[in-house]
Length: 465
Image (tube, rainbow, N blue to C red; front, side):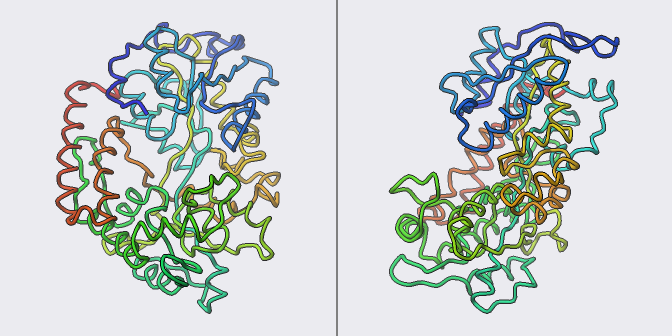
């Protein structure tokens, strides 16, 4: 991905700021076409993302009003590079896809339009969407994007493995101490670097280095966005806890060997690579999997192959020693969002598309044939989706968690790309015993990250205003 710093060099072009095109406030009907970019091959959808975009856009274009054209920039494995080039060349799209990391970047650098004025004008009710989705849409007190499909990270537990090994599955862990005990009991070694099953593999859990510290009470960045807090005791304790389990399993290399030779690959597996955590969990080879709601996709695929389907439970992430006693807030949020171009002449058309996306009807098309969850509370409960034996897997279990989480599954800051790069540098070396003292390593990472933060605010003193 192109760094956030590189975006600062691109000038934002376009028409005057504010609503343009066919204004709805004057009673005029919206017409015309507008262009939206997303990075996946929409005509040859390979997973939930492009399927959702295709279905959503086709449904929207059947409604009287504007028409959206969904484009995938050539070679856009990540959309940031062609998007930057388009802004630099003066021909950016009217809107584009972003994930939770990039929304503050686009907002701070002047690429994204604030949606607060159109929200107020149309009296759009934010309570119709999940709390976690709205939180991800905001930065610095303003709304900068619309959630297309939110995602959350929480704890999946294999009730099948618990029951098959004589462990009470009615009481699920709420603390790291309880999770420790469960993972140790549900690890069975069969030979050198080989296991019948494991309790959990922390370094394959989704965003483990971000979500575990938060479950231990950490705030990785201060609330005002001015101070890096990557080396606090809460963070150090979380990273050391994760390494403790890797040591019990024989280390990162031993686990990588087992993931290549001891478990089956999923539908998209490439021979010779390590099998991902969701596929290990789905085939009843890992008891605890801190992962996203999209883990359901792996579960449903494995359930088609196994004689006995996986029984699972879901909870917020258990708390560390310094974390909250009530774990309901230990859910980390992210997602795929829609961003509108600042100063673009078709903000009203983009906003109309955004409102359709967030509606119950739009949400149906986002979710159909996918494991994605739409941003509409009502739409997410659509019986056509939730009662479907295919797309409905797990939804009744984890949907309540979309309104409880207050964390983020990555760092939320306009300099997040640079901050995360510094923070992540010592992680794998520490797990592999190439870095002996994680406290000192994180102290240095924090120093370097603070430099990135200070530089950002020096260059962008009015960011987000």
